[in-house]
Amino acid sequence: MRDLRLPRLVLSAPALALLASVVVGVSTGAPAVAAAHSLRLNVREGAVISSSVAPSDPRGLALLAQINKAYTHVPGVKIGLTFNGVSVGSFTEVLRKDTVVAEQFVGSSSAGTTMLVAPEGSPTFAREPGSTCWKALPSKNPQTLTDIGHPTSILGIGTLKGIVVGPPIAGLDGDETLRIVQGATSSFLIINGKTLLIQRVDASTPGKLAEEYISNLTSTPKLLKPGPRC
Image 1 (cartoon, rainbow, N blue to C red):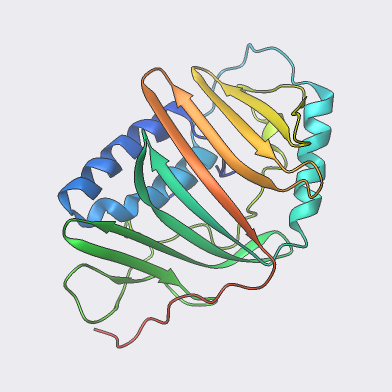
Image 2 (spheres, rainbow, N blue to C red; image 1 turned 90 degrees about the vertical axis):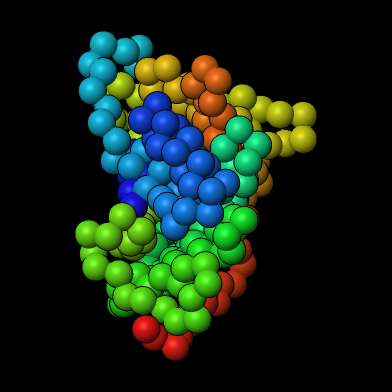
């Protein structure tokens, strides 16, 4: 499963389409609920092919650099993901110097709860609804968590082809908003003005809205322990 490496937090049109299929999986109880992770990393690595775009605002690029630096001191994040108002699930990531070293995903449906966890130095383990044990997943399994080894923030996004970073917009509450455009997809990053950490990402194309609600943690999160094994 892969997504903003575009850096992970900005959702492209293909990723939004993928997320729509994920939501169907959630509502039907299909194990594909875990493909929500694919949304988050495919967007990050998604095909960005436009070459004729306006230049990014240097103030926006400078803010992205500050965000990246701020995340070097964050030990973990929890990210709730919704699509058109429907909860898809949540990711928890353990960070070390802005790099994901361990991760888990939990998503619930009418069939039960799907849990995925990738402890540091281990493969991804899955516990599907109705199961009492954890199964190790092959690296090419679509449910495999693939954020491991990648940065969690978005430095460098402004240099990708087809991406336009706008100027920071100051809010009355001291927060800042940064707009990033990729083709028909507009993403808005809501950033804490004091910590420079991202609090929410709203990404939209006509008729589709994906939202990430980000909790920046002050201590290393404890992930699920995959046991007993199948």
